[in-house]
Amino acid sequence: MVLVFDTVVVGGGLGGLVAGVRLQELDLSALVLEKGAEDGGLNNARISGGLIHLAWGAMDEGRDILRERLETETDGEIDPVLADVLADNAGRAIEWIHDLGIATQAKSDVIYQRHALYPHRPGTGRRIRPEFGPDRMITTLYRTFRESGGTIELDASVTDLQRDATTGTWTVTYRSGDGSPDKTVTARSVVVADGGFQANAELLSRYVGPNAGLCALRAMTSATGDGLQMMLAAGAGATGLGRVYGHMVSINALVDDEFWPYPALDKLCLQGALVARDGALFEHVTSTGVELVTLLARAEDPRGYAVVFDDDLWNTAGRDNPYNTAVPNPDLVDRGGHFVSADSLDDLAKELGVDPAVLSAAVEAHNAQPTRRPITQAPFHAARVVPGITFTMGGVLVDGDANVLTPDRHPIPGLFATGSTVGGVHGGPHGGYVGGLAVAIELGLVAAESIAQADQKAGA
Image (cartoon, rainbow, N blue to C red; front, top):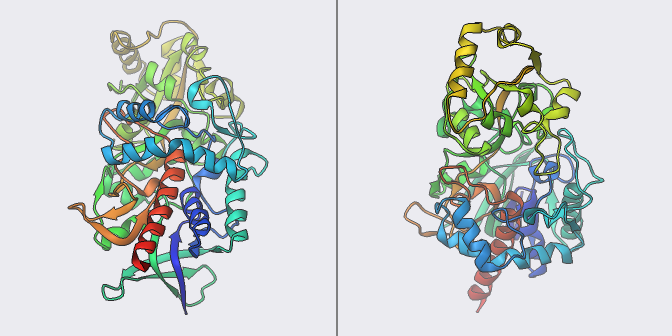
């Protein structure tokens, strides 16, 4: 079966649907292929905290301010072309979603919480919640796309992308979960928006660390890197594949969805004593949770860590709540996560099943570090933790038009990308994060408009 559209969008998440809706607005026919069988797709936006920010700045803060924020957040590692594009398009991107009827409202007076999808999603476990802003955004995009004449096929896994050098068209092959024969569709252009490869243990092992697949998946299971691999096979270049975005979470997140995406244990892990499976101190110089997650994802034993802290840290860092979401104190305990307490370090060591002398030495070494908070005030506490990967930061090279590039930075005609499948945006030595929702929206708009502009030139 061969179908013909102007554009095929691979992935029905935020970036893909933004591109699809914008294409329809520009009078181009679009087909969205979504791997998930459920309407709305299997995408991280649906379960996100809903903060739409750019490098921890408000989307309408002003071009020059945002451009500087992008540079600072990534320690200058962001692709300057993409930094310009994101800074240039932030304001009109938030206006565009508002025009669709997608509601945002400030979550607090903190600048990066100015545009939070409304109603605000609380820090619940991983569940689709249609009554809150993140899922309402996706529902609105699906409805708008269909009402404008767009076509969505659910339960459709893309398996191959091929470009005909003679005609310049793309053939996309996909299969349905019902076991029916594979289908093909031809189009002048393709937008890949199927996320990173955080749900693919083999790719994590290849690009991030040999045992990175043992980390908790702090995300939906759909992002297995299919689009990345197909684009690489089509000649695309890539950048930053070894870095991930995420937060430290309870070890219980490996078996219970109530422990991800929140509560995050970053602050406790950064200020407390992180110890290995034998109780010895894991020495590190990371300053952000994202940086620590990437470091531990590369470790030999990502599941072998616990954080030790005292009552003072438990009542300060344990309650710290910059995102207005669930926090360790009290949510970790209330949800039944691993948490042990004792009046002495020796007794705490017994609770953890480690040698008391080893744990005492770890705390002593921790306390000797001038940049760490001393652990001195009983009762003492510990929680077993694991790095939770939300998405992989690296991806394909793209230019300022969201056109996918070869390793030597030549555009691959008709191939575009948006969202977490794009590299060169997040990164830097401290794991700089510039905002997943913002990047998906902005590059989705840019990709659609670049396709429309190329179509006009071709028809001129």
